[in-house]
Amino acid sequence: MITYSIFEWIAFFMLYCLVGWIYESLLVSWEMRKWTNRGFLNGPFLPIYGFGAIVMLFSTLAVRDNVFLTFLFGMLGATVIEYFSGTAMEKLFHTRYWDYSNEFLNLNGHICLKCSLVWGIASVLLVNYIQDFAEKLIHKVDSTALIVIDIVFVVYFIWDLVISLRQAMDLRKFVDEYIMQNEKVQHLQKRLDVLIAVTEDSKEKFEERVEAAKDEFKEKLHEGKQEIKKRISEKRAMLMLKRNPKASIKSIEKKVMRLKEILKR
Image 1: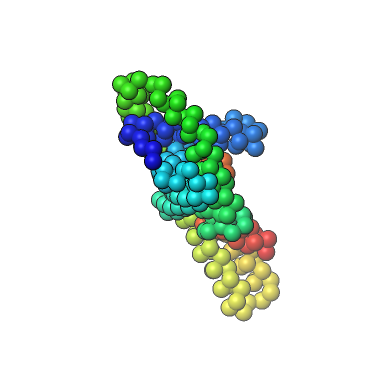
Image 2: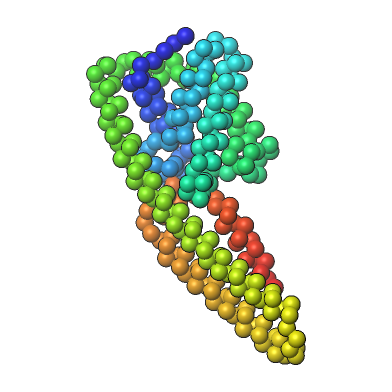
């Protein structure tokens, strides 16, 4: 069984964070037809890939000579990391930074069969091919230099993480404000529904009251939209959204669909 020092593990984590960032940034930039600095962090590192690679390597250390077990253990390890990372980030920031809800056999939109199989294949490629190259690359670095590089990386990583967390919390404030505005609109909708149900006025007076309620509803909705635009223009929240153009906010999306139906009445 191959073992690594703590500094080698850190170096591997850094390397795979960088590789993941390059892959995701190029992929999303191609899909969006413009350059996108992809990921949760500001810098060129994508932690989910670093943690995923470390978990795949660590979980397959004892079975790396067995392709099937490498596939299985790597797939399970990476899938668990992806699920708990996605769940924790959504609960903490009220935003999904990846969403597999439309994929076949998904679990709460955080993981799906297709991606798990990809993790398994990636584990086999990582253990049998990529990691050999990474080992040779890391081993070429002098041990003292490696320690210095690791320390610089860890300091930078923590600094970037703190800044990114602030950006994510600003985005959460935007989400909370959006939800609050939607709750106000829903309250107005209930008032409108009650008015329609219990009114015994003449048809003309009834229609006037309905129109007045609708005007109030639309005015509140407009005010909510303006407030949202103001908050989303905040720099830190905007930076987070730009790095994650496909991020979804399920609690908001459901409310938006309801609002669209209401406005069609």
